[in-house]
Length: 75
Image (cartoon, rainbow, N blue to C red; front, side, top):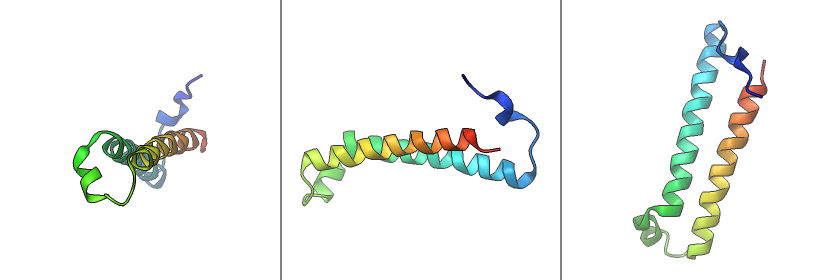
């Protein structure tokens, strides 16, 4: 179930950390998708095999969602 208490009035510090957490979530998802789908990264990282590049991308996406879940559980 979604916790909508996250949108209640917060102190400026808590609001800043919430916004920073959401920005970092988006950053990790975009970076993970870039590793998986963006071909020029494959050329620059030629020492990493394709399966390794895809594994890094998937790990980054999973890590982004773990961070988002932990962000929602904080008080």
